Each structure stands twice: as C-alpha cells, then as structure tokens.
Amino acid sequence: MLASISHTSLANQVRPFNITTVDHEVLYCWHILPIGAYLRHEGAIINEELGFVEDIRKTQAFKLLSTDPESRLVVNFHGNAGDVAQGWRTDTYRAVASGAPDKIHVLAFDYRGFGYSSGSPTERGLIIDGVSLVKWVLEVAEIPPERIVLLGQSLGTAVATAVAEDFAVNSNINFAGIVLVASFSDIPTLLLTYTIKGVIPILSPLRAYPSLQRFFSSKVLDIWSTATRIRSLIRSSRKINLSLLHAKNDIEISWSHTEKLFYVATNATSTGLTTTQIDSVKGHQDLGNGGFLDTWNADGMKKISKEVVKQGGK
Image (cartoon, rainbow, N blue to C red; front, side, top):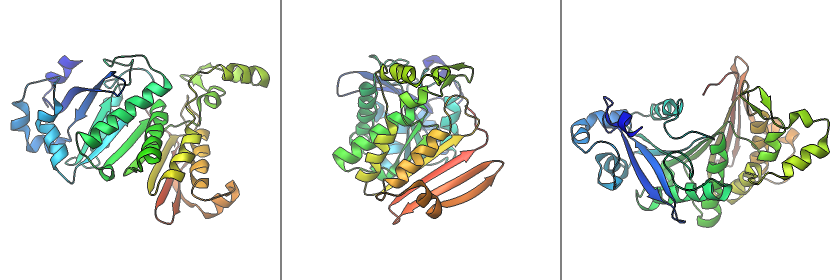
C-alpha cells in the first residue's frame, strides 16, 4: 500500500504517519491534502521524502493545515472491515475534499486491529482510538474544534458519536459538525434486521421466536448504543450541527435506524416531545425520486438534519 502511495502522479498528497493512543496502541493514519493546496505548493511537497513520515509535523502538508486559519479538517471514521485504503474509501476522501478543494483536509485512520494499526478491536478500544486521534488534532495540530468535522460511516458512526459525546461531556468541546452516514441505533437492534450483503440474515429468521432473539442479542459484547450516546451528546452540547444521511436501498443497515436516531436527537433538544409533535414542527423538503430532507433547529444552537435518498453507493 505504501508503494502505491509513493508512485502516484500526486506524490505526497497523502502522507502516512502514526500516532500513539493513551493506552499505547499505534494507529496508522493518512493526512490527505486538498488538491488545490497541493497544486499551489507542489514543488515543495514533491521534494520531500516520499511515503511514510516519522514526524508529520515537519511536512509541508501539516504546515498548510495548521497555519491556515481558513483550513478545515474532516476526521473520517471508516466502517467495519478493511483499512484506510479499502476500495471506495479513497473515493469518499476525494468527494469530501471536493467541497472546498483549497481548504478541506481529510484525516483518515485505522482503528486498533485494522490495517497497520496495533492491538485488537473492542468497543472501548475504538473509542480510545478516536478520542486519542482527535486530541492529537486539537493539541498537536492545534486545530480548533470550530474547524473540525467528524464524519462516520456504518460502524464509524458509532465511533464518531462516542468520540463527540466524550468531548462534549468531559471537555465541553463541540465540533463544527458531525456527519453520520448509514448509522444504527445499537448492535442488538441492528442484528434483528441485518443481512450480510443483503443475502445472509443474522437474527431475522428468529423473528417468530422473540425469546431466542433476546437470548442471542444478550450475548453481544460490544453494544454500541448510538441512540443513548446521541441523546447524551445533544443534551451536553451548547451548540451542535448533526447531519444524518442514509439510502433507502441500503441492503445491510435499514434506514429506519436513521429515522429513529433523528427522533432521539430532536427529542433531546427539549423534554417530552412526541414523534407527532416533532413531525408537526420539523422542516421537510421533498428532494424528488423518493428522497427527502427533514430539519430541526432548536434556538439556532442545535441543528439536526436527516437526509434520506432513494439510492446510495459505497
């Protein structure tokens, strides 16, 4: 993988490096420089040593991120399996950066036990990974939270939510945005409808036997209760911009999970709102072709949106 990075036409646009977590695991990371900034400084960038760097702070890419007050950083929390270079993930980085090709940097990393990162994955361990990385961004890269967006996909939505909650509850830190793509409420609930590649069901064949479903769900070690954490995150945040995105044709995670999380989040901005009351007040926009956008704005400080489209892709 490192060889493929080093011999592209955009040499050093991606800078691989490591950080160490608070519990001494080593995480493999990519800093992806926005193409506009890369082209403006191409001469200095390509003259640097190619490939993995021991100290990312000495690179031109890091300097462009840390010294430009208008730069933005998207921290990407990828889904289950694979690594930072897995198939469609590089397309995600390009799509994210294209929003502002001169200003949006992307920081991607592998959780412990994934790719080149050390350790074995657990729920607590992955949360430590995410918190450690964001602390590095805040304290080493010195990027203020108002210039940081947390982006999670699939499993990464659970990690990103847990990280955002940790900073809101323990440090009173709120980020510029939190974007959750194909999120789920919690693992036991997800397993009731989850199918591998839309073909192999996990627990849905036991739907007629709820006691058996509950038994197997109770054996799950890592719960990833995103619904509970989103409620805590919203209530603990002074200001928040939360975006939920899902495709109706998602064959693995039903978009009903995003529906549930939207109501959990909006309800957390007040007390005792019913689904009917939320529906009567929320903003709603028909996007055509079966898609729609629901929005919620609590006093201009807590903004929540849910965008559902008919078709999505990896």
